[in-house]
Image (tube, rainbow, N blue to C red; front, side, top):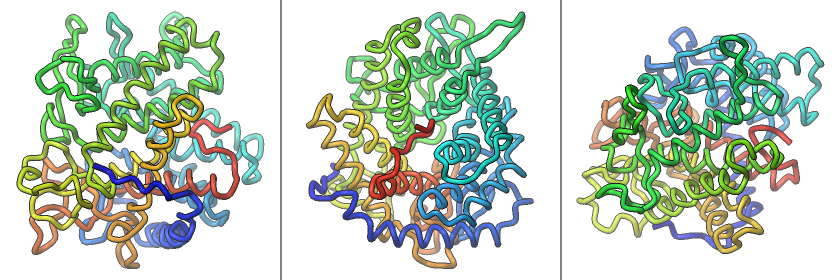
Length: 457
């Protein structure tokens, strides 16, 4: 289990963060110079160079959003101009993409950042430009909410697998609905039927919490509190939940750690968003106490599971039930080994989780001081490991920023270096992006800037 560094503070990370931002900026500029965008969005590296992987273009927002995060952290305007230019030139197809559940990944990471930075006064944006970003986020939230499977008890945004499928990942695309709702937008349907985006956000989060997150309450023989299934499968004839499933994990009854990471981070940041809404706004959907209890239960359960089922340095293996782990001895009581011969680690899950733990710890301040401190220190501990070697990519020729990320282990998509038995030494666009996002979260606290949220102040 994670060994918390109880003396670690944000300011003690500053030296490592300085190095991190230097490496990050260099890799962003090299990618812009060297990557051939005609090949599609960069997804993960092979032998240190980013390659595409035809599935969906869900990583393009991370590519350009990285430059906007770099500007936010360092104030270097060349990164603002890079992210701004590429967003306007290349991201518009994502705004009206009805075929994916990835709007939070692509659009909040680009248009959303630009809108937030403009609203903070971090750069001079004309009223027309700011209105353009607002319109983009309004459209994105409504388009994402339209991808909907209705149930007797609410419903969910369905995955690219089809209307029967709910992915754990999609909890993080609720950001698009949240920003759109905050801007006063709604989903308009036939006969001018108006649907609240906040209502759909809450309904999707409830369905996710009920079906893919476990609480140790006797649901099945593998009901361990905090365990997460990647996918929930529904019978569309009657709307009943049928079974858990997993696309990228080892099995429906083990926990793919990146799926857990999406859940933890997604619920933590949505709790922060709900805190900004008036009680009257939440009352039609069950009221603040009931809604927040569902979100908090899922966030705390997954946080506790992560702390208990992750090696001492806070970097997880790709799935907590991966079969090779049984041959690794007491692996939870020592740092993760990305070069082992049995199972790969997934640093990208750690990048996502670190931010989720920090946000959850902050949210619990004044509510449960013991839990708040535990989650906060865990978040700092994970981030400290992530921005240190062997995870921080210091080689200039390697295009990735965070090493030892895994994309799709069951499909065998990840590169295995010569002499190794499992994937290692490579990066992913989402791992690099979320490491930057977590680092920015801490950097703004150190610098005394406004608290970072996806929806702005």
